[in-house]
Amino acid sequence: MFDKKKQPSVELAGEAAHASAVAQLRASFEAIPAGATVRLAKKTSNLFRPREKAKVGLDVSGLTGVISIDADARTADVQGMCTYENLVDATLEHGLMPLVVPQLRTITLGGAVTGLGIESTSFKNGLPHESVLEMDILTGTGELLTASPTNEHADLFRAFPNSYGSLGYATRLRIELQPIDDLVETRNVRFASVAAMTRAIDAIVETREWQGERVDGLDGMIVSKDEAYLVLATLPRRAAARRDYTGAEHLLQEHQ
Image (cartoon, rainbow, N blue to C red):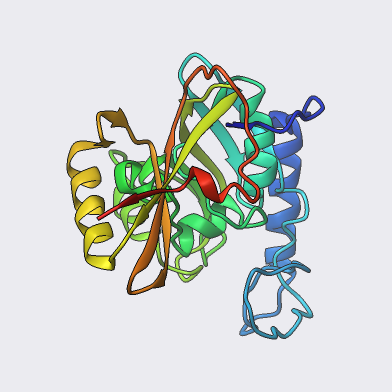
């Protein structure tokens, strides 16, 4: 069992600070010379290749937090540059988590939506953009539009995922959350062939369970043609014991 990391209380950005950050962003947009390339003026990147630093760009330095959380509705209003690390720290205080959390903790919510993302819960919860309820988007004309699946900007809402910034920049995203307990139970299951593991994945995707136990997270790896593993997670769940699986090869179960 893996205990969630205890974090100090996370301070939410709030509506006033968010409005100020958006004003700062729009001012930086207006300052970009006509004909110049518009890009985010940020220092970090999750690209695994060299990237030229932007000399001018959109000032997103104030858009790195969680604006608010509605625990009853299980939703959060999140700024576009908020990393999943900071987002999860904030939601865990309410016993909640995003429906999908990418493996790289420094990926931003805005980046996961505009560039797509995937993780172990995606087999049942979809991709990050599929739990977005609405977005505030700064467009290439300087307009700030609120897009949702049903309003007048529904086309923009549907086209935004995987647009890689070509349609604008999301300053705020309202996302669905799901409940999570203090502990997540995981099982490491070994298979003697890739074909056997593939059959197991098909069964889990169809039934959402394995050997009678509910599966909420699905991950794995292939070592060789004769050795493959699935890591199955169940949440939320009260567990009787806590374990550290480091070096615990004896916990692996082999399935033909």
